[in-house]
Image 1 (spheres, rainbow over the protein chains, first blue to last red):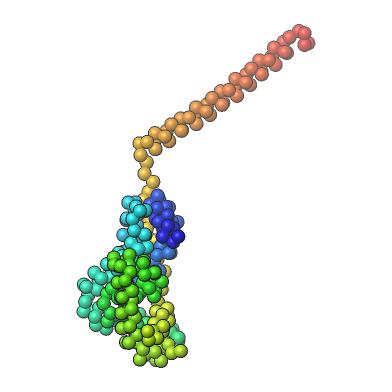
Image 2 (tube, rainbow over the protein chains, first blue to last red; image 1 turned 90 degrees about the horizontal axis):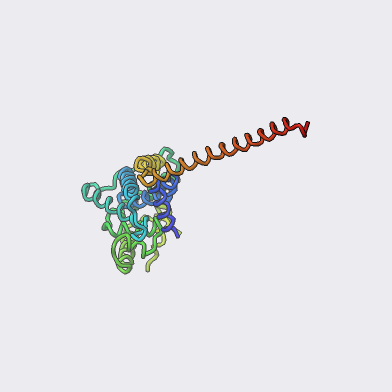
Length: 186
Length: 86
């Protein structure tokens, strides 16, 4: 089970095993970064949140108790709280236009289209309440189950189902007119 | 439900990838925070005891080997001096 493996790696790290830290980071960092990027729509802030979450995990390692929360769930919670803190600190930015992403070097048509899609989704996500945004990202970016999302958001599975349904509906309403322009017809 | 499956494609197509520099920073933090093995009085005592045991075994092995060699040499001398063997 993935949760057991995370806990075993964290325990090995706490015993001084540097390789365990590398393996655990490889499992968690890409997903934490995807979550924070989606919720914050700001690459620099997303990197900071990911690094801070992992730093807290390293610090918690010596006192980690296996019977507590799963390592990954603990990470999603910490990252989401950090995201919320940052958004509240910069509310003007968060609810205005999403920050500009750094322009990747090549401007090939595929790259331009990918950039357009990202911008459109960022803008639509910025209009959703925090919990809907977080639930959608955990479902569609991380592939978590409703039970896992409920654990990360400290709510019931019915509440998650409702967050996901409302979030999808709002996003679809906002983005449906742009489907053709975003190359998503079909 | 109205078709909103294009959202799945949109999420998949616009997912951020963690830069290598971020991974490097995370691993640097891990190394800085990595707990080092701690020596307690108990573990130090056990280490010292095993060292002493090793020294004793080594010394006793050498002593036994020297004793055996000396005994064999003595027999050779006795045999050499014995008129019956001349």
